[in-house]
Image (cartoon, rainbow, N blue to C red; front, side, top):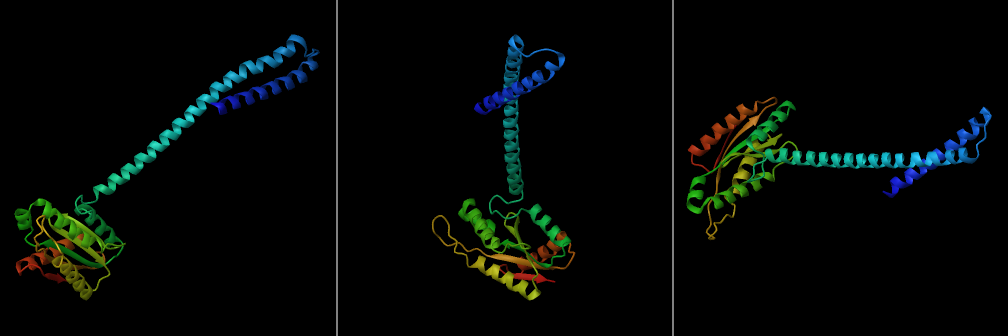
Length: 247
């Protein structure tokens, strides 16, 4: 408010100065004299008119500026909230990994960029028995722990996702066939050796079967996932807790 008042007074003084300059420049040229009532009007009128008018103008301008600032801040908060919501919609709520649609979307992007690598499709063995025997909270913890293991392998072109239920996927870029097998066995071993216990403290055995497929340049994400799924099925039917891959 003090700034508005100061601006109004300054405007009034400038108006007064302009009025005096005009009066003393024009009136003598017309044969008149700036004195008496004329001088008072020359001084009073600019002050009486300009100061209130300027105060109203500057007050409205200040309100408008504050409203624009508030609107800008609200839009910024809305954009942040929207981005957070967008990111949350791409993540699995339990594990924090990419959900199925986001995982496939990223694979599509990698394919367009010419990225190659190994696609690992894994499934926790006998997961239903964990839920049935120890409760869904224990089953959820097994999923979270598996998600933590896979999350450690994420990078610029390396992604992990939970595709549904107890099924997970991991894409590792620039892996050779031998390196892909080693990575599969490494992850299988980490899950198999996971120190996992129920709420009562009893040790629960957790293992995973893994099907893997090598993705060549320009690969089709859906076809590669289908091939990895077929290898996963072979790993399941041949005894579980093992790896089957193809190139």
